[in-house]
Length: 359
Image (cartoon, rainbow, N blue to C red):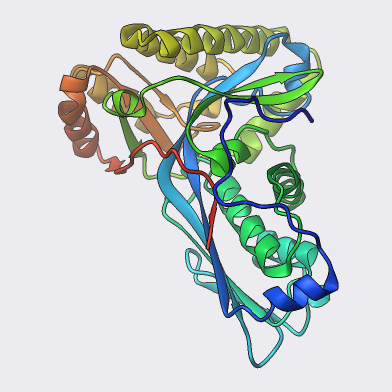
């Protein structure tokens, strides 16, 4: 994998540390370690970031922005010994005598697999997220990055960002048992607004020179009330693409072109063109599978447009979760009110310039 671009920024307070026994003992004297990582909104080019889809579309890229709804992890020592995993979001707890006894196929499988990888001992790992479940804003990827950061610090493992990214991506794939995209881990690591360039030579994150306040003034983020179905949607789309479905191929060609056009518009500050490209992206995304949109989503989009929105799109794979509605800054309040009256839950956010933080 290629590295980040020179303008990509750094992942919070990460430092490379050797994984040796003496350093592990030093860090295990700590009482607790905490971390957090931001979620994201995807602006264009989603799904094409799943390997190997982008290899069939020259110039593929995705555009995303990290947002302030963060995932949190904390590792604390257990004087009584053993391993404890706690998810505050699901109100579930798992205990084991040692990390080797954790069942990666049982409850809290993601946390169990991560604790096994980092060989966490005599500690409690507690997690929580600020985003709704199944929101489509990469809450699980942000949580995975946060847990990797905390456990890397706790066990004195490598905190190199690229190492953390690989572990997070691979363990999440083991958990959900379908291929994962590559875009979601980078906003969690680095924050900001960026393009993720995808190609044969590797993957490169390029920071976009965009005023985050100007962008967030034009985007309303809302939760539809129903979780999205990313695993099913994406896996069916991948299989159809690999099997040579020409319709799917052409949809991704247009999605690729939209990401390129939106990147240019963002860098120029051409906000009307950004809105137009969001609308084009949504039309092409709906063509990927029947379940990408729903009557609820269609109704919310119609309400937002009646209130002044230029365009909107779901976040992630669709079928539920969150949507963004884009419009002039002066119409933002009216768009938000229309979505709330339609039954959506408005999510307060700002574009987050800081990525993974470990304390």
